[in-house]
Image (cartoon, rainbow over the protein chains, first blue to last red):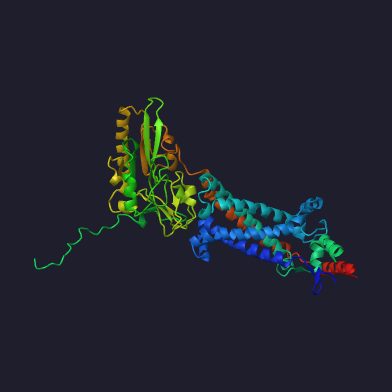
Length: 214
Length: 317
């Protein structure tokens, strides 16, 4: 019996380290979105109550941001090796729209560890988080409030808000894909998927797994 | 003389009630206010640069009235002391030595810097905390420290670089135009202390008239470009300057020629971005639900399971 197979016919998808890092990133992201929206839109200011008031929200938000960046860095390092784009990814992207509505993936090229959409999400979030980190540090009043010019802070606060909204939209998409594709959530929670899930969504990855490591 | 007991006479004060308050707000940060029932007369502080002798009595009066203290200063090579506004020092005299190229005269330009109480206040526009910055119908822009969260966005919003964030209480501080004094019929402490009447206070109309007289006087003394600084880019201010070189406001320690709220701040706080963001978020959520319902869950079939298991077992054989 291979190391990739555990229990009754399941396939190991994500290691414990990845799952823990992902859990930290997910919780951090949700807290950041709530506290960030509270500080961005007056109509959401009431959300500061979740964090113990406006001042606590202002204090906590950057620290949670660091938790997100660090946990995402772990994920990125563990994933980036499987995130190169190839010819199949282009074909996959062109045909994904149809598969999204039919739920049938026969016409798609066989997918490795990540499909093109996941790769774009991993790269895209990394870029957005870099912008959020840099601009966030610039507007972190308590420690860096007077280190840059006011014009730099104006640009940073605008960039931070726009990129944050983009990241939230990306997060919504991510969440939707996970719930739509049955059996995907458990890959990130308990770490395993069914053989059928791997066969349907990541056949090339399953083949490599079976061929290479067992 | 048998009675040695010292009896204090009653204190020579009378109760005063503020003449304006929360009912007179015309703007409130990150929230809205009902239109006030009355409109207060607009007030203004007029600072006549040509009359200022740089004594810093205004700074001392400001510290005194606001019960603030600053550390003993260090000489940084110029008369400015402290060298910049601080969370405790709401006004600073900025000294500029300038050789007038026309007359070859050395002119000592002294400008009392501090909050301008803009009619269109950038600090208030940028503030995310409801009610932390308010504007009264008399023109005074004031900070409510109870509601301030210390984010520093007001610094980004201000076209004059005025608010300072305290490292002690983590809140924004600036000149209040002595709103507490004005509310009981007094002028600002700095105006009261000024020995040359370079700082005067009254209704905005009165101050404009007074400024016109001063400008006429300056022009008769050879300052052809004397004028009033009441910048229209922020819809005018409630602290105005009489400048002897109004054509070159930058001379006075970088007083901006055409101050306005930065376009970056306008976009950041603009309704367009707010509605576009909210619409996109709602669209994504609605789209996800519609897609899920219309396309159904993407589930691996029994045949997929069979194929997957076959692949694994085929290798494990």
